[in-house]
Length: 292
Image 1 (cartoon, rainbow, N blue to C red):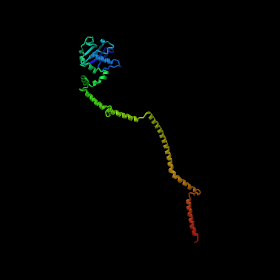
Image 2: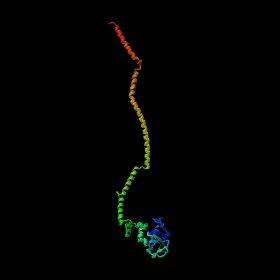
Image 3: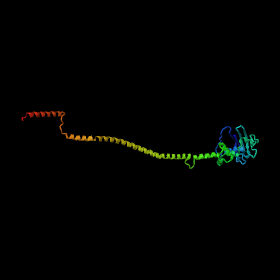
Image 4: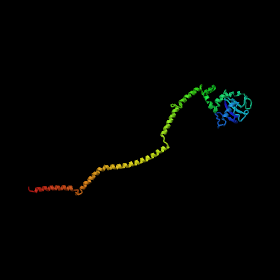
């Protein structure tokens, strides 16, 4: 069954409010709180199954004036336009206001009762909060059969049990080896490591200033080291020549002792040898001339 149009002609807070669903596809009816979404849902149920005898949707329109119009269709081409009024009998009318048998809805409802419709398709917020668990637990044979068929399974409990096992393997409130628990622990450990490796803005600023001071001190030390290396090289050179300087001093002292010595000419050696030779010759001659 397809709901092509819902006309809340006189129901709840509505007067001639038309919700048209002519085009195929999913339709979402939305609005702010108290806009009438729940009233529209009650109107849809009332259209299909009748307005409750003790309805609370008669605060704007009197009971005998309550009217809901609808247009339904099926995949095989059947269509039905009708009106629902409040009453104890003959509440289904044609578009012209003529009485219409309730069986006219049978091809469209396909055996879905008002209770089943509300359970499967008409769940409002309150019903979802208070009755959702009953659906999940498959209370009621019809509900169980429909939900199992929708899941392609003969036992919804078995599917839920499998999901419970899978969920238990993913997470436990006090677990440690489950996938999510393990991931959460790793996440917490990494966060702790990040915090331990991180610095606050104050600490970072202190370290930055300390780095600046250390850098300046290093530059000063490097400059002093360069100067010291130059001085060391100078002293090493002096150390290497000290023995020669001492010898030089000794030679100067010896030279001072010879300050009165006459400086001989360059040919003194030759002249001396000549003189010695002449002396020796003279001595020989004298020796020969002297009588014995």
